[in-house]
Length: 173
Image (cartoon, rainbow, N blue to C red; front, side, top):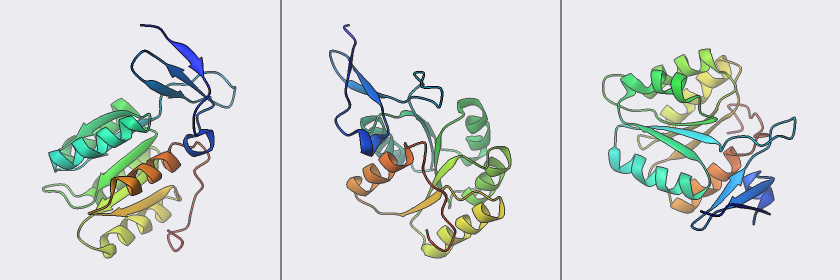
């Protein structure tokens, strides 16, 4: 397989300073503050619906993410600690352990992780997650209400891949 550096098609959207093109794909490469090549951005998807995580994973891979899927909230924190994602996509309503408990534990470990909260059960759950984020002094939380279009997901993932994803207050999100 041949690998060559190329300029990204959408530098401002993805935050990638360069891409590597292989025979089959173009992979965004992110640079850290020291301007050395970093690994791909990592996304951990936690949702009890297997079909949902598969669709999100496919879109995220298209956006240049390295993806891990977890369909059992009981395994979410361990997966987070092992995978160390840059972005966590978390369903708030799951059997046995809800997403709020997972979010609380994750933010105690890494208050700077970028989080996308998803729920199909209404905005009150999403606001609760944002409030918990504010309590932990993390503002890198966005929300996405199910069902959503792939274009909305793609836009949010591209925004989340930027290392300068700004903090927002719970009121502004």
